[in-house]
Length: 273
Image 1 (tube, one colour):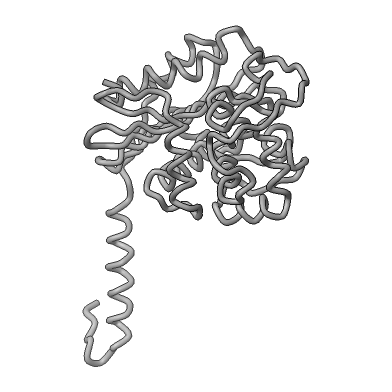
Image 2 (cartoon, one colour; image 1 turned 90 degrees about the horizontal axis):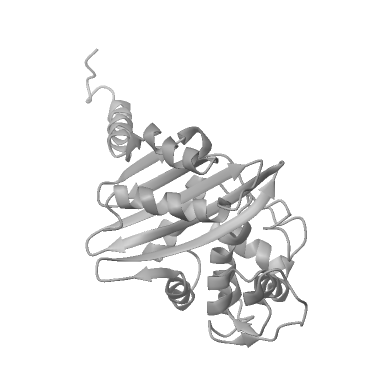
C-alpha cells in the first residue's frame, strides 16, 4: 500500500521509525562461532566459554556462546572495579601507598608482607582489597557498583566478601562491556583512577602489543570457576577477551589453564603476534 504523505502526515513518523529500526539492525556487530576452540578446553579437562571482541572489525567471536550470558562469581576479577572505587573514594591515595600487613599468615607467601595496590593487583592479594572494601563501606560501594552497572550489582554477603563468597555475579559478556568502557574512558570514575588501573593491569608490554589482564578463581554451585579477562592494544586495534573455565575436580593445571587457553586463542586471532 502506498501512503499519501500529504493526506497522512503520521506516515512520516512511521517511515522514520522503520528507517531507524533498519539502520540499527544493520549496525549490529558481526558474530563468529568457533566450536573448534573446544579442543583447548579438553586439553585441560575443563568446561568453559570464550568471547573476544575485535574493535576494528566490530566483531565478536564466541566459543560456547550459550554460556556468555550466564552469571558467575567474579572472584578476583572484581579487583578491576574495586581498584577504581577505592581510588575514586579516596580511601587510598594512589597505587604506591602502602598498607601494613596484619601479620596473619596466608596461603600465598606473596601476601604476607606490607604491600601497595600495584603489588596487590599483580599478586591478587585478597586481604588488601578486602581492607579497601571495608574502608569504602557498604553505602559508597553499593552506589558505585550501581553507577558502574557492574554485574548483577548485588553486594550482599559481607562488605569484604560479596565478590568472593557473596552474591555478586557477572557474565562473560558484562566483563567485555566493562573493559570496553574502561579503555574508552566511559566508566563513571575519574580519568586519573582509570589511568592508574590501566597501568597496573599491564601483564606484557612489548613493541607489538600491550596485554592488560586479571585472573580470578572461586567456587560456585559445586564447581571451581576460573577467569582470565582483559584486553590487548596493538598499534592499530584493540581486542577484548573473557575466558571463564569451570570444573568439578580442580587439577594442578587449573590456574594455568585459564591463561594458557586465552593466550593460544588470542594468538590464533591475531591479537598476540
